[in-house]
Length: 295
Image 1 (cartoon, rainbow, N blue to C red):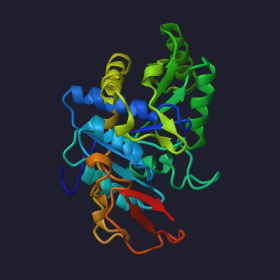
Image 2: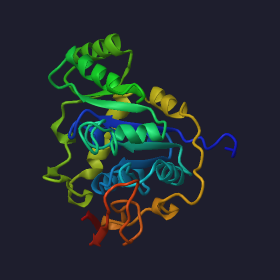
Image 3: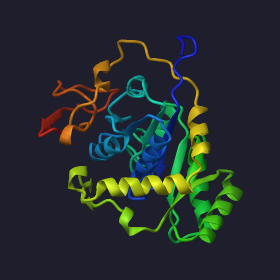
Image 4: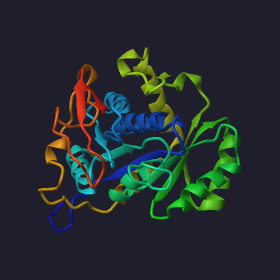
């Protein structure tokens, strides 16, 4: 890596069509499977969520960081990624909600799509295939064409019932979109992580979490094209380190500590004074029991 060429950071975004489609399960399974191959995986989460990063940290054996395109300008997103993945073989970024969901119904600001474009990262789209075949192609085609600048590089079908079902989804998506099906997960109730009204429960509350992570790693190793996924991540262009003096300080890349020594909600420091970012409304952060709340 040189100043002229930038920093080579293999990276991949795991996005979904909607919340609850299986993004976290795919991200955790990929992390475990890649670690078994001897790779160091640096986990990231789009948005301010602190719960998913706690699971990522358990799977990766290292802190997870947040990449929040609403709070942080592009330069700070890049700096956070470079710092968090400096000693890793691959940066794995889990999106939030649906790929295009962000600040409003007519803008991608704050969305996973915006972060993927800012970091020039390919997107692996997770879809719910539990009750569809050819209609899966219509879903992927819509996501592909809504913003052609987002690089949809592969699809994961969750809820696949059989080898024949997998073939139907694979062929339909490939014929209509040209995007390959790079993995599937089966209909398996034991894989579901418990949730409550604000999302997943914390890792310490999940009985048998180690077994679930092992099972997800087994399934990904068996049912995903890990070679193709590694190639996609490695083909990303180098990233230039942003100049110092960006509107948000570089210290925000350091992970905070949350539940049981795991990363906290934003990867940022304790309280800071209110500020306005890029014309957004004033934002303050209140920290209590290691959990950040936007007020």
